[in-house]
Length: 145
Image (cartoon, rainbow, N blue to C red):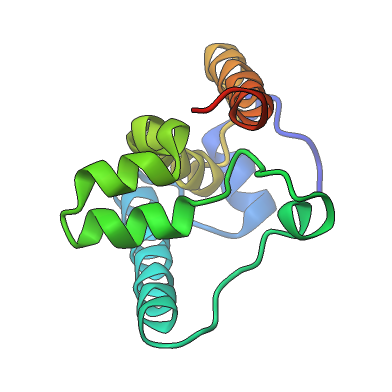
């Protein structure tokens, strides 16, 4: 797939990808993608809640250490039951940054549908978040947080 530079015209991008890049069309496809993701998340939630199936953390299985994402599923299940303190204890970092993550997922769906490059400021913010994510993973295994 050719790299997006942001210099192509709307008509060139529409011809290359064979899709309509009008704002209404982009909005509809983005909403469709988000709805599909929410639907899959709801299915996973009920599978986790009513069965013994769930995603395993292979980092924890192999090393015994908690990865930065360990506890996120339990956090979401607890938050859905309005057990906020319990949800916070499962994964503090994801609890605090979850709205940001959701916003970024929606933003990436949008720019993917609009065939736009990711802006530099957003890239910096993502790298900062990833650095904090890794730092949290290290600290949660050293300090009692």
